[in-house]
Length: 369
Image 1 (cartoon, rainbow, N blue to C red):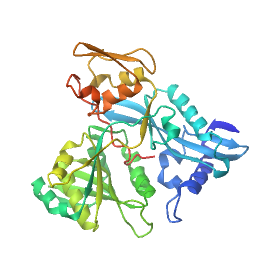
Image 2: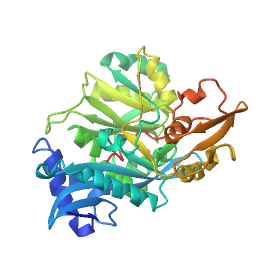
Image 3: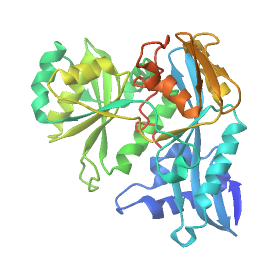
């Protein structure tokens, strides 16, 4: 068995294997269409296991940058992990994961975001992270949302000419993936997360006095695939009030009986507008799990958001030392991730932490892999 990084001219083998494993209906688009960051031509970071000239296991590994206020994180994302049924039980995926971790360690990456939480990942040290709200909305919220916002907007489907305005609104978020307008154009067309849950992606925009002030990407039932999940808000940006009106408009326009709205904790203004309708959210973690590649590297990349010198790392995986209220704390990787990214961390309950929790984007969004 040969384990190696994928070459560009080998990715069609990965598409074939991924399609065979993941596509549950013949109407579902090929994984090669849905996930251009993994399968499009370019320098591949993904790994495969080969039995002679047959690809028998694959792990998609994609570099991204995340902008968080004044800081930038270099991260990898793992997705489209699959093994030929005839080759399971040989720990091939575990070996591919080890290669991906070594790859990240040799790069400038600080985190690996994984679209899954199974034991393959948790045994290697990946952990739940962050916080989010999950609302389940019915048509009963339409009028209360419209009343709560106190404004009127023109709602319509996104047109190609709106691309730069939607990109502008994406860049204004507290935390988001760094994406050029050209990359956004491809991701909107790919509809990755919507295709995975077998829904049709719709992009709505809100205009006020001729200016785009919000967008909402929503996965709704279509006429081609049988849905595997309820309608879902995939991504949003811009004015929270205008976005709330887009949510209300989507429920009405697409005749939705239920719309799931997951929001990372920092989207508190939109969450408050939804809660004002009487809907109580479910408190959840961010989607998937995270692996800490290097604690010192993570702290360096987050330095603009942290008090200077507060957290000291003694090694790539700690221990990490800091003093809060004259009490010395020693943290491991899990403790550091909790302190940094979880607003409900046990380290924050006594109010002694002097810096705000650091937001991350909700990972089951447009850049989902």
